[in-house]
Image 1 (tube, rainbow, N blue to C red):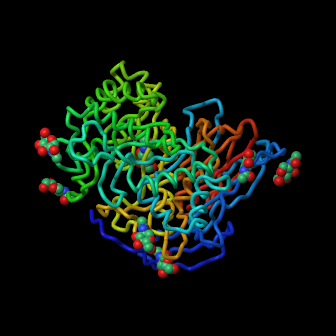
Image 2: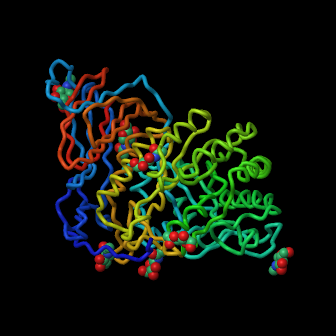
Image 3: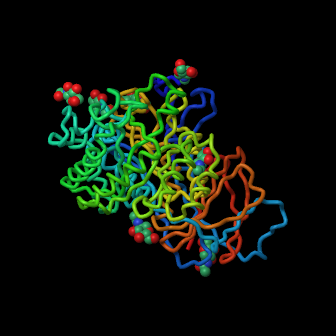
Amino acid sequence: MKYAIILVLAVAATIESTNGCKIKRRSEFGDGSGDDGYYCVCDMTYCDEAPNVSKTTNYSKYFLITSSKSGFLFHVSNGIYKKSKTIDTSAPLGKITINRKDVYQEIYGFGGAVTDSAAMNIHNLTLEVSEQLLRSYFGPHGINYNFIRTPMGGCDFSMRPYTYAMVENDTSLHHFELQVEDNLFKIPIIKRAQKIKKGKIKLLTAPWSASLWMKTKNSWTLDAKLRPEYRQLWADYFVKFFEAYRHNGLEFWATTSQNEPENYKYIPVINNNTLINAMAWTAEEERDWIINNLAPTLKKNNFGHIKIFIMDDTRLSMPDWPKIVFKDKRVKDIVSGTAVHFYFDHFISPSVLDEIKELFPEHSILYTEGCAGVFEDQKVILGSWKRAELYAANIIENMSHWVSTWIDWNIALDTNGGPNWIQNFVDSPIIVNSTANEFYKQPMFYAIGHFSKYVPPGSKRIGIKSKNIANMRKVAFSTSDGGIVLVILNLNEEDKEILIQDPEKGTTKLKILAKSLNTMKYW
Ligand SMILES: *[C@@H]1O[C@H](CO)[C@@H](O)[C@H](O)[C@H]1NC(C)=O
Ligand SMILES: *[C@@H]1O[C@H](CO)[C@@H](O)[C@H](O)[C@H]1NC(C)=O
Ligand SMILES: *[C@@H]1O[C@H](CO)[C@@H](O)[C@H](O)[C@H]1NC(C)=O
Ligand SMILES: *[C@@H]1O[C@H](CO)[C@@H](O)[C@H](O)[C@H]1NC(C)=O
Ligand SMILES: *[C@@H]1O[C@H](CO)[C@@H](O)[C@H](O)[C@H]1NC(C)=O
Ligand SMILES: *[C@@H]1O[C@H](CO)[C@@H](O)[C@H](O)[C@H]1NC(C)=O
Ligand SMILES: CC(=O)N[C@H]1CO[C@H](CO)[C@@H](O)[C@@H]1O
């Protein structure tokens, strides 16, 4: 794979918007891929909001929020459920039936990552515009994010590789210190987000690599491991990190023990030159380190409440990794669950998630990282509807297989999809153009919002049955604000009429636009 910087040259035309924002269209002449769509420009003067729908006294009424390749962005309409007899169900229409009695996993929420790069990009906007950006994710008129993942030290989305223990052989961690990336960028951005969200954001972290002197090879990347003699020191390092963030007023909800411990196996298959920050572990090593070092050390230092998740890697590591860890009875009260990344999902059937959930029902499954543009030459594509479909299909499919949380990668990147010290550029739901002091809400932003805004934390996935709905994806929830949400993704090039049936409400006929994502919500 080439990691070339490819600027988006598509000619953008401003058109009338459906939600008040200045929207631009990716030109048909872009790259001939037909991957057309619209994105919204937010600047000093204007930024669109995610519409709030709330309970009405009208028992039959539902709201339908629609975004589409044809230019709808969170467009709200409504309709009413009718008693079945009054609807002509003779035509061979597709049909989706809600089954409220079939109750599955709890949804903990949605979020994204505040990497060094994301925080620097946001910081590069004026205070006013950057506040709009943060409100778009975390504000009452935004898409209701309640998770932030932030790396413990440097990752590829940093300007340089680093840790908090750069002084060689500092085995007492006497010189441990947060860096300029934390102090000037990540901590202020996370605190502003917390303020907007009134402290309700759950923070997660993971290290990408230990200091070079702690590793078996003098290398930031791939198969270099933690030296066995530094296992306790590495647990102490986690405590130092949590103490330093606590000192800055930030508490963590969870940690994983390592980001992508198996990426030494697959990164070389994609790109032999990638120096991605990494540290290799086996499942057995990770399990024993958590039991012997991390968990007792956190407990002893008043961080025992921080949840520990394992793996934090792609499904290529499943089902073996969680099996090896969870079969050991000692982890039962120590490890909360498995963290999964969405790259390579297409290689392995989602049934591995069902298998793990069946074997170990007490351990939850979180999606902790995913993004578009990893495998394509063109990193940032403004207005790509295909990438909105990728996100929506992924959330729908994964939540249908027991996933409780869906956390995006960088919450904001620049127009190249960076910065990234190894030029491993990718796309993001929000692209910042600091030269113009504006940012662009991509179709991916609306795609996540169709779930995160309308399915609040504490909701549960419920069952649905369907027939005759080829090329449509769907998932339903019973929401913690007392409602029902049905999300439907239409991948077809044509509009579709389908019947929606909820035995408690009746039946309604919906017109689902070609290439659209729809959230139906009612109480
Ligand atoms: C959205 O609606 C809910 C009630 O359903 C309400 O609690 C909340 O304050 C509303 N948010 C805004 C921004 O109006
Ligand atoms: C419920 O709302 C629908 C659509 O707005 C309307 O046609 C209907 O009369 C309303 N029913 C009641 C009882 O208000
Ligand atoms: C921030 O803006 C400055 C000046 O426009 C630019 O040189 C720098 O690369 C930007 N930083 C990031 C992280 O984009
Ligand atoms: C650190 O320890 C290693 C192994 O004992 C040693 O080879 C190296 O010279 C030490 N480095 C410093 C700067 O003391
Ligand atoms: C990486 O190097 C290995 C060994 O030389 C080779 O087999 C593989 O095809 C290379 N992968 C790529 C993507 O170039
Ligand atoms: C960023 O803004 C500058 C200045 O307005 C503009 O020339 C450039 O085309 C913008 N970049 C993108 C990708 O829209
Ligand atoms: C575990 C799981 O269901 N993964 C799915 C996530 O979504 C992608 C994209 O739709 C699928 O390819 C995966 O199978």
